Length: 217
Image (cartoon, rainbow, N blue to C red; front, side, top):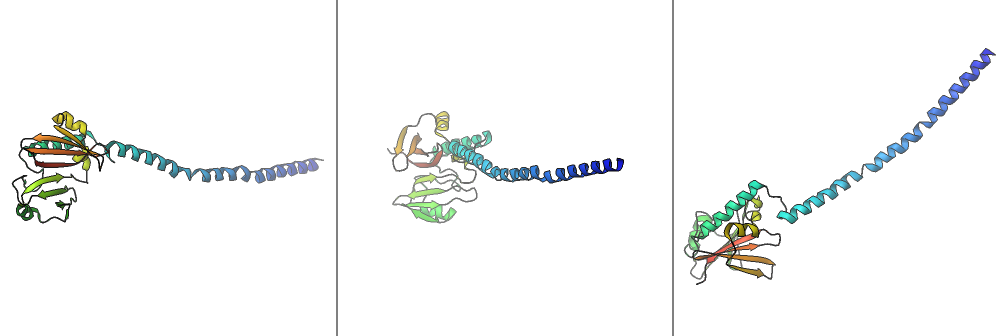
């Protein structure tokens, strides 16, 4: 009887063991599938967040957030443009060309001929932190107008960091203001000495380019 009882117990134990073994894979497999199904959602989530952040940055500063240091650099550029304009000097164009005085031959001798001409303007393309310019000469080959476009690299430290609010705070209300229908831009005009300084504000709120020319008498 003892032997028979032991045999029955052994059979019961083995049966329970087989049952447990056969049941183990069942909960594990769905768990692994759940992990696999979750993993593709990670890049979708991060991608959506990145798009929102990029949109906010672009809306505020045209693509890049401006730090206090960069803003101060932009304001320094703004004030330097005004200071040079009082003497008719084109901001940071070589050694300092002057509206109404410098000639085409002088410009070509110092900075070479332009890469191209567009609408009567000599167009100098910027690169590696160098600003872009468009220069217009009169019929006597004397500099009549200069357009400063700033840089594309770290633009927020120059024209990209200058807004209408900065102009009003630093230099007061403009002497004139014009809308540009073709582009939707706004031209804020300041009379500085014998010259006219124009800040063309783009749709993103920052300065697209600056024009310097002689003031009409």
